[in-house]
Amino acid sequence: MLFEPFSLNCNGFFLRAERPLVMGILNATPDSFYAGSRVQTEQVGAAAGAMVEAGAAIIDVGGMSSRPGAELITAAEEQERVLPVIEAVRAVDPKVVISCDTVYAATARAAVAAGAGMINDISAGRFDKELLPTVADLRVPYVLMHMPDATPATMQQHTQDYGEDVVTHVWDFLAEHLVRIRNLGVLDILVDPGFGFGKNQAQNYTLLKNLHAFHYLGVPVLAGMSRKGMVYKPLKIGPEESLSATAALNLYALQQGASVLRVHDVREAVQVVKLWQLLGG
Image (cartoon, rainbow, N blue to C red; front, side):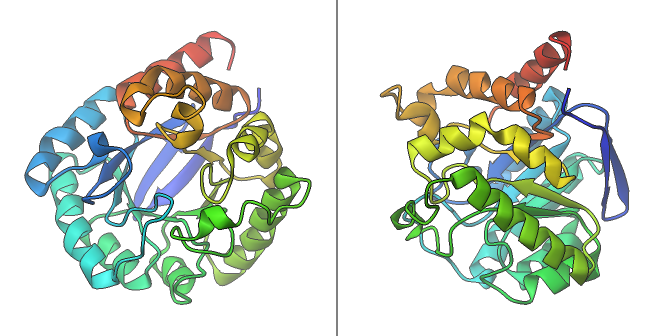
């Protein structure tokens, strides 16, 4: 059994995980790769309520698509999208942990002020040098993700950057940045190997088969594969048809030590966690 209970101080709310957690995705974007995750402000209450009822411990709100080929938007535009959603989620359930998916310090600060309790960053603090000091000042958990030294618009041009061993490359990247981020004063950190971010299909599956290696970084491991190309493209289907395949890979990720599943479909992911427990997880 690789999973170990963990706790996070989320803007004053103490989240204790005795089993793997499910993080539901709410995208306040017009162009995220899976249309089913996009919500308008007037839909947030129902969508967030359904996720909480289904068992989501965390709801991840994003205002900027990070799909392959996507361009960055400004922090101001991002805040126009995410802050009303965060406020609406907070109104639905004052206890659910809200994560804000951002690369910008200004958005992180505004999101926490609006009720978010976690920052999820695809950039490892490389797009805005003030982000990591801001997270340390806010004293909220931080999700450190691996992506090549590129942007979403160009990341798929960097799949050859890893040499012969993608697992060692990603592990070393996360280990190095963990030290740097801890030295800045960030207390609670999760790591995400970044499935689909500058990786080809073979690299994604190599990372998944070796996900247990990231357990030895000593922090919770987040797995975000939900309806991504690594799931549906090998099956020659679309993202809207990939729920059962996503569930299969999520179960494998739990067996490999994942602590958090980031998903579009909360109810099904919670069911996967329950079955994993019956298997002796």
